[in-house]
Length: 172
Length: 172
DNA sequence: GCCAGATACATCCATCTGGATCAATCTTTG
DNA sequence: CAAAGATTGATCCAGATGGATGTATCTGGC
Image (cartoon, rainbow over the protein chains, first blue to last red):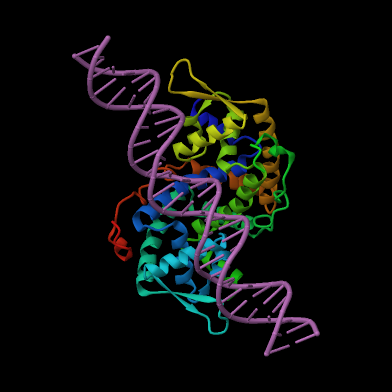
C-alpha cells in the first residue's frame, strides 16, 4: 500500500472529518508559518495581532484573544515585539489603568498591507480547487462550526486524569 | 463594537476564508491538545503517530510524514517516546538497514482505542452544528482543497527575503 | 477609606518545535 | 570492490509555546 492509499484509508475511517481538517491545516501551516517567520522574522501570531490592531485601532489585548484563540501571554509577547519594532504603540487607557489600548503606527500599517497581500494570494492558492459557489458553501458550513458551542467549550474533552496514564513513566 | 461584532467584521474581510479556518483550528487545538497532553502526558503528534502505526502495522517513519505533514524529527521523537512507554516496537527492516518498521504493542493498541474514542466524541461535538448531509458536503469540499497542489507546494509563499524586513532589528 | 477578591497584562520556566547537522546504510558507477 | 552520492532516521540547539505565577489596578462590601 503506497502513501496515497494510506491517506485515502484514513479518510474513510471514523475520524475522517478531524483527520482531513488536521491534514489541511498542518500542511498549510507549514507553508504559511515558515514564510512569515523567515520573511518577516516574527511569529505568525505577531502578525495576527497586527492584523487585529490595524483593523480595530485601540483594541485591547484581551479582545484580540476573542478573534484569535490563543493564550494570553502569546498576545502579550506579540504586542511587545510589535512595539519594539515600531509597528504599534501601546497607550494605557485613561479610564482603566490596567488596560492598554493598541494602535498601529504608519510602519505597522504598511507592513500589514504587505503581509496581507501575500496572505490573500495564499488564500487564493489554497482555495483554487473550489469554484466561487463552492467556496461560499464551504464558508457557510465552516461558519456554522465556528458558531457552535462545542468549538471552545468542550464537554467531551474536559481535563481529568484517567487510568490510561498507566503506561507512563512514574513521574507524577 | 463588541467582540462578536469584531469577529463578524473579520469574517467579511478579504481574508475571510483563511481567518475562519484559522479560528476553528486554533480553538479546536486549544481544546484537543490540552486534553491529550494533560491526560496522556504526550504531545499530540505522538498519538497521531500511534494512530498511523496501529492503522498500518509496519509503517515507516517517513510514511507517517505523508499522513501528518510534520517535520521529520517530530516523527523521530514521537516514535522514540512511544517506544519508551512500551506502546510500540521499532524493528529494523531486513531488506534495508536504514528503515525502521513500526508496530504497536498490545498496550499501544489499547491506549489508541481509548484516545480514539475520545477523539470520535470530540469530532461529534465539533461537527454537531452540521446535519449529516452538510458534513458530507463539507468533507467533499475539504477533500478537494487537500487534493489541490497548492496545499503543500506553494508558489505564492516561496521563501525569499523582501525589503519588508526593513523594520526589523539589524540582526542579519 | 480599607480590605478581599477580580481583572488586565507581564514574566518565569519547563517543555515543545523545527531547521541544521550527524551517523548509518544503501545505490550507482566504474 | 571502492568511492560518491542518496536516503533514512537520530540528535543538537536556538527559539517558540503556554501554564503558572507575579504585579498593578479596579470594584464591591463594610
